[in-house]
Structures are given as structure tokens and as C-alpha cells.
Length: 215
View 1 (cartoon, helix red, strand yellow):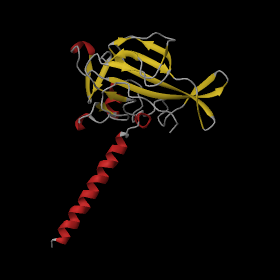
View 2 (view 1 turned 180 degrees about the horizontal axis):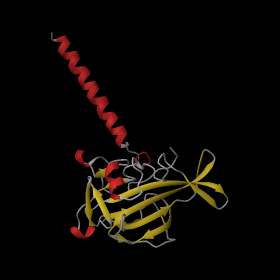
View 3 (view 1 turned 90 degrees about the vertical axis):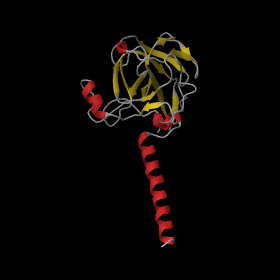
């Protein structure tokens, strides 16, 4: 893990799973079969390539770090209206990197390419543009004006290999996607599962101990 911290891009959202009272509807790596079927050429076992955070339609979306707006896409395909934010250079272990964060399914875009932004600046509004999958349910934006509204938040890293040249870091599936969870200061989906199993094991051991004492 590189030494870089991200701010929650949806202020007021709780970065825990929706079934536990939070706003995350989908973690990184979830539903691999669904994505492989829905998107031609998608890596078969990779699953979801970001984190989905659901707040009311139109909630302001904020920059998760300082940087420059690298790209904007306005369409009704896949990620819909999207923003890509490029960080400034940072050092980790003597190597120079840049971060790219993506903000997809927006209802409004409030920045332009080349614009410099500060962490916390409003760059758009949450929506459901494009092909939306929320809690493993596919929606198309024109079937319901607000169905499945959420922010798809993605992360990737570029490593500097020459004075004006960067190379994207690849994951085990050959894509640039990185799980944003640890950089947001939260547990990954797998870590949450392990925590729950550890807790259940502890409770089970306490129960067995009590039973033995009462025998």
C-alpha cells in the first residue's frame, strides 16, 4: 500500500456496508459474474472495480484529494457522466507516483478539464447516469429518474519512469484498478468478513466455555 490518503468524496456518508446502516452498496471485487456477463471483455474474476457510495440523488460530490481535472466524460454508457482527477506528484519509498480517482454516474459535472481543485471542493453531483448496478441490481438511467443513484468511486496509481513519462500500475487481473478502501481508512470487504468470522469464533468459544462450566 502506498502512502497516500483519500477523503470521503460524499460528505455525510457513512463508509460502512448498507446492511449495517452505512452508505456503501458495493465494495471492490464484488459480483464478478455479473460484471463479466454485463461488460464485454471484462476480467472474469475481478468483480467491481471501485466502491459504490449511495446518498440521495444530487448530493454534492467532492474531490478526494488535491489535483487537476484530467478527464471528463458525458454519456449514457457504462459509467455515464464521469470525472477523473489527477493528483500532484508524491514520493513513496523514493519513487514518484500520481493518483487518479474516478467519479462516475454523476447527474451534474461542475468542473472543466485542466481545472485545479483542492481536497473537499465540490466537483459534481451524485446521480445514476449510464449503466448502473446497485446492490447487485442492474438499472438503466431512463427507466427511473433516481433508481440506483450512487457514486462509483475508483482509484489507480501511475509510477514515474522518466522525466515526463508515467506508467500505470497493474493489478493481478491486468487492469489499473486498486481497492480504494484502505486509502479511505476503512476495511476492505475481505477484511470485514474476516473480522466478523473472528468475532463469531470468539463468541462461540465463550459459549462453549460457559456450557462446560455449567456441566
